[in-house]
Amino acid sequence: FFTDTPAAQERAEKWLRSAAEQGHLTAQHHLFVLLDRGQFGENLRSPEARQWLVKAALAGSMLSQGSLGTLYFNGGDLFAQDYDKARYWFELSAAQNGAYAMINLGRMYRDGLGVEADEAKAVEYYGRSWKEADSAFAVGPGSSSHDEAATEGMWEYARILRYSDHVYMENQLEEAVRIFRFLASDQGGSPEAQMQYGLALANGIGVEQNEYEAIRWYLKAAARGNGDAMNNLSVMFAMGRGAEKDQEASFVWALRAAREGHPLATAKVGNFLSGGEAPDLEAALSWMLLAAERGEESAKHFLTQEYGEDYRQRLASLWVEP
Image (cartoon, rainbow, N blue to C red; front, top):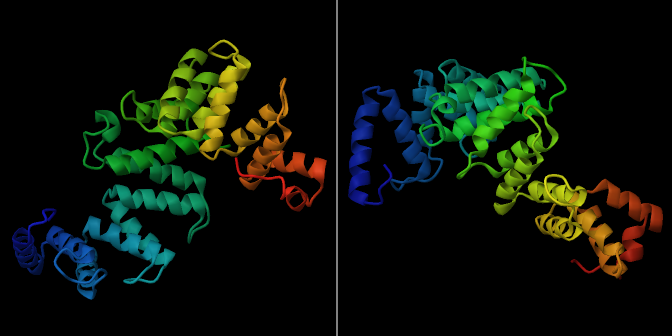
């Protein structure tokens, strides 16, 4: 399917059509995929693609049921958005252990899309999704053809366990942190998971506290552009946690996080610039205004207290984007 050779694509189309017309469900699904992508000259979202997808889904193809659910979930040229129909097809696919369908059901219950929001059901579907994705958690990243599904399911499952107010299992925090550590991995892991694992180490949540190790994981995440990790490094150096207290290093990390768009770090830069031996109040105000624009409540409160509700208008002439 995936070569750019026209002759190879024509042969693929020929054999897929032959198998699809004989009722082969996998062939029907892949013919839909190829027609839908326009690799054989058809228009994207072609009516024929829809016909093959529906035919395979009705005949019981787990992949086609999940794809049909996704098309109803997103809406578009082939199907109008319909969360009820999306859920129907996702549930059929999930009943056959379709990991992507489980992830989408998790999203629906997490966000209340077409259903009443239900965190417990979201946890159930996210938990099932990564466990069904070729047991990727047990054998390691990169070993499964469904790593993407496994990773997303694991991430959302761990995130809910970590931050939920509800208790879904014994040792819930430990389970969440164990998954963050797995997803973080030393080489090529998720920067978001690296940050979360560092946060757990820094505060002794679900794992023995180790501030030195926390900094090591924050640095890994920061090296890959994670603003939260940069902001957390600023905190660690400011407080002397896991390293000697170093206000200059704290400022540098806050500035790096602010340049990544981190609202709280942006306000911190304003605070840094307003103090010290050589304060730069105009620059400090510019950073505070930017922090407020980014949604940082502490910056909004400060500016409102100092300059009134119309602080944007009053300070407009002073503000130059940092």
